[in-house]
Figure 1 (cartoon, one colour):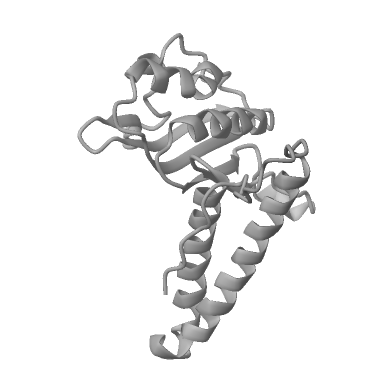
Figure 2: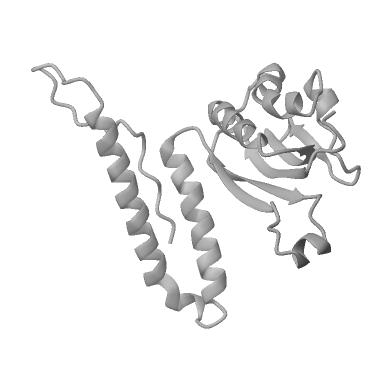
Length: 208
């Protein structure tokens, strides 16, 4: 396992839907950035969390869901692990979802705070999905959830339809910009080609 003197405790939390029929070996390889960082030799060895009360890394074969509630000791180099993990899970995921990563500064104490030092605590929200549209859909759904929950303290839910519509417009524009950038990167079509398919995949659905 990682050095007990590592300055950070890093908690990874998420629930990732996995494509049906995915082999457990593929899941183990996709999660290698995590268990390898923990100093383990396999997923089964690295799946337990630093804290026994946390379920760790689990794959529910009945639901085809990867469940993450896992803590490891480490440092800022874990941010590279996050990038590798997301790229790997994009290949296996069946829908877009978020993964939360929280960094806790275990060396920071009251004396440090009194001396004006800054804690290294941090929180990062990651998104994974099978394609850009699925990732944007997950981002959109989370934003709608947060905005509606906040505004329902002051307004009835039925009054927020316009707010949701405006958020949908923002994500539609972002998706169109992404598609345009992908189209610009394509080689010119032959003179016989008349198609105008979107290189970025399907447009995110709008849920009102």
